[in-house]
View 1 (cartoon, rainbow, N blue to C red):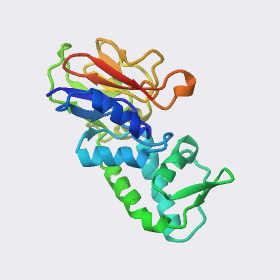
View 2: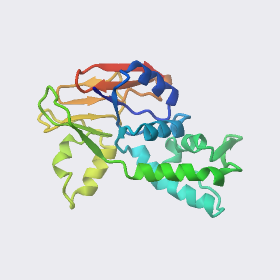
View 3: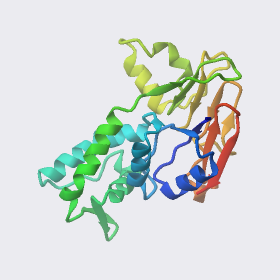
View 4: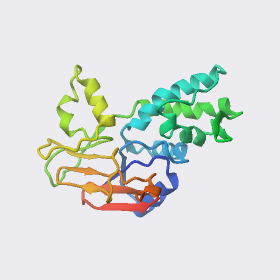
Length: 240
């Protein structure tokens, strides 16, 4: 069985299903995070990954859902007005809340759905799952580079040596979720990641692969979801 690392899905469940259909039936799926936000089917994507037991690292959008989604849940439970001005809502969080049936749009403005409390349990359970996602996964795979194969959301090769440092954990965390600097050629790991959209399809280099091909950016000329096969170097893509 071969490992296929799938780029940022961003709530595009139907596109993900078309990509999975193109992969071998026994493929081991690994996700680079950012399953959610921007697209209209985040809840469905999370359900697919959870129920399938697929490997997945935490992305910056999962971190935002954990932080701001937890606060949203408290507002709902305590019958407080929802506050729609924060970094998560303005970067796709509204679409995620809609996918869970927790809010609806009235005259372009998000308002709480009448049955939000009844639907909150699934949302909160998914947050608990998101909270325990790892920042990186080291795959048990022999790669042509001879280096350990490490999947993360953002590039972490430059801070790989900090992963076990208590003093530098916050730095490692920030880099794993938000970094956009490409790995150096002398990196100690073969790093597969997403986070930063690549303009011409997956970027495959001797020491790293960026597999974020802009699934949610069809209007900007990107609009593909891609998977990289660790064992063969093959890239499989579908248009969103």
